Length: 79
Image 1: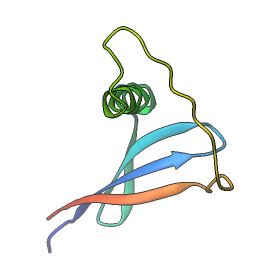
Image 2: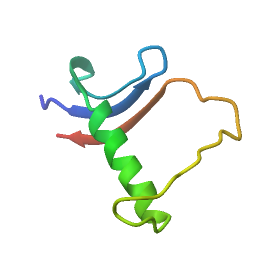
Image 3: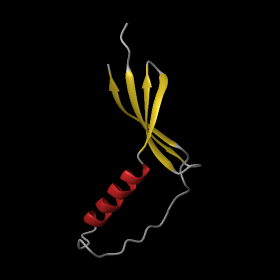
């Protein structure tokens, strides 16, 4: 019998936490909080995509739709 490990990327709207969750054979194993790392990377990417200079620039974000609920996405499976 082979055990399958899954990695899921999740966002908890209540706690505001972005996490990688691991599951072994369908059972929850652990949760790793990656909120700060993801936010820093996304902000850096937005500044780069908008062509802002390295030490300046202002981005304005506007929500055009209702806030989505908790998001869970499978990002990998290891057999």
